[in-house]
Structures are given as C-alpha cells and as structure tokens.
Amino acid sequence: MKKLWILNHHSGLEGDRHFELSKELVPLGMEVVVFMSSFSHGREKYISDKEVEIKKPADGITYVLLRTAPAYHGISIQRILNMIDYCRLMRKYEKEFYRLFGTPDVVIGSSVHPFSWESAYRVAKKNHAPFICEIRDFWPLSLTEIFGTPKYHPACLMFGLLERRAYRRASAIVSTMEFGYRYLEKFPYVRNDRIYWIPNGYHTEEIDKVLEEKKVTLPSELDEYLTTHWCAVYTGSFVDSERLFDMLDAAAYMQKHQMNEIHFAFIGNGYLGAEIEERVKKENLKNVRIFPRIQKSQVAVALSKAKVCIAALRDDRVLNDLGLSLNKLNDYLYSGNPVVFACGSVNVVGESGGGIVIPPGDTKAYVDALMRVYHMSDQERKEMTERGRKEIKERYSYSLLAKQYMDIFNEVLK
Image (tube, rainbow, N blue to C red; front, side, top):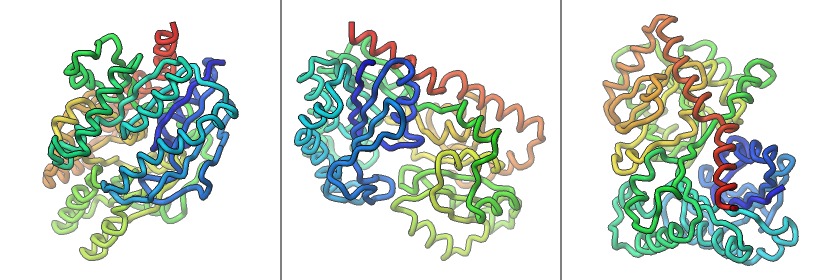
C-alpha cells in the first residue's frame, strides 16, 4: 500500500471530494490520510471540541480534524488567521502524525486557500515525496474578481506569492476546472504536461443502490412537501456564491403573477439562512419552504422526488470561463430531473443537454425556463434527463476519476 496524505482545510466526510475519491483509491492500493479543519466553513461552527481528533470512517481512510482558530464569518481577517492556524497545527503535530500514520509517499495540497500548499510542500520535501498542487479555487484571482479586492492589496500580494511558489514546486498540478490550464499557462515555468483536469465527481453506483433499496427516508415534513407539490428544488449551502436570492426573485415573481403551478424547496444551511427565512416571511412567499440540511444519501432521495432542480451562479466570466466543477450539478443531472441553471459560462448542464441554461440575474428568464419544464411532455423530459445522466456516468464517476489520479501518482513516483 502506498501512503497518500491530503491537506485540505475545508474537507469533509460523506459527499466530500476527497472522501469519495479515497473510497475508490483504497482498492487501487492507496492508504489515505486527510487533514482538515474542525471548523465548518458552511455552517460556521466547530464539529469537534478537541485540538486534534482522529476519525477512521472507512478501511484505509483516516481523517485528522484540527481545531483551527479563530472562528470567522465570511471573508475577514479572522478567516485568514484561521488559515494560518491550520499551518501552525500541521507543524506542531507533524512528528506525532509520522508516528501514527508513517511517512507519505505522495502529498496533495488542496486549495481553497494556498496556505495548505505551503504545509503540503513542507511535508513532501521532508519525506522526499512528490507534491501535487490541487486547485479548487484560484487565489488571489477569486479575491480580485469576486470581491473586487485591488491586486496590490497585501492579501492579494501574499496569496500571489504563495501561488507562484506552489506552481514552481509541484510535480503535478490538478485543477477541478476544465479550462484551468488557460490561467496556468500564463506562468512560464508551468509546463502543460504537468497540468491535469480532474473534476468533482459522483458515486453513480451508490446513488443507484440508495434509490433501488428505498431504505433511506426523508424528514416527514420535507417528504410531504415534495410529494404533494410540483417542486423546484435547491440543495446546498446558503451562501452568497450560490445566488439564492435570484431564485427567490423567481418565486416572488411567480406568486405576484399568480403562477401557482410551481413550489420551491430550499434544502441546506449556511450563514445566509436567517436572511433567506426573513425574506420569505416578510414577503409572505407561500410558494417557498426552507428545510434544514440533510445527508448526502437523503439528497438523492429528495431530488428524485423533485420535478426540476435549480441553481444559479454569479456572472463572473474571468473565473467561470475557466470551467465549473460544482458538486450540486452532478447531483442534479443524475437525479432524473431537468436542471434550470443561471450561468453565463460554459457548464456541464448546457454541454450535456441535461437542462436549460439561462443568463444570470434575469428573473423573467428563470420563470420562463421553469414554466417550460413544467409544460414539457414526459418524452421531452425523459430525453433531457437521460442526456444529463449519461454525461455524469461517463465522465464524472468517482471510480473513473480515481484511476486518473492513480495515473498521476504513477507518473510522479517514477
């Protein structure tokens, strides 16, 4: 067995990219240790009270939860300090980790933030192991494009330095974004043959089993709502990047114009949760219900009971044109339902034909797309959903993506 260490501050268990990849890597001969923070970015709370907690969720897979501090809300100095604390704790317990898990043969440093690259490279260099730089967000590009941070801001300069160091040091660079190479090729020291695309995947076989066995149930209120209404369903985080208020705009428009055929279910949690509930209450949106976060297996059941899956993304061409790799789109396209997605860039919904893509921020276009799905014939709906399911099964299955990662490991270990 080869030992793989993955340093991912914002990792998680069920449904998370590295947990699902690890389940497929273990049978291929990898023993995986993932180092993550115990502060949940989406829920903005700690999931462990210990400074270091070790979990073994499956054979060959170990998770190390680090209690990074301080807690934070949104983009703030506290969040940057939390990132730095991740590096501190990795260094503080490094020798203990070697004692417990042995030394790694390969090390992956995975963004969101680039401090994880620094820690991963340190571990890799000390153990003469290849360092793989995995990019799930480009920093500082995300700061300058999404938040309008000046490129000469100290945070951008710092992240830019860390980014360049990681690209120079990496034996391989893996991007979850299909066209990430367009950005990476701007760096003269990054060779094209070191760049790989491995998107966020989907466990098609596991979802098939969940739906066939029918052992997984939903909370009674959610199940009743989905069963008794023709529902457009959103699942995921209640955060700015997901543009939930754009979808609420569509719901408000439909209620105002007495378009009562479609109801909306928003399932999840996040720092915008209270604000979303307040708007629903204030505007008396009778066609909207908010439900708490559910387990990954329950998401598949909920989506199977939906009639259409909905999502939206801010119109950021610089970032989005590098390619999108959103877990929820995999869930949606494999659900057996059409998808309505507000996005201004190339995406898997449009490429596969598994749904309708509309311009972001256009409420009337969103309403029209939903009504188009509502009035589809069964045959039209079946053809659309089959195209989406085919795309996920053939290009996004975790079993296929794990083999692609194994090819990279074999290359850098030569």
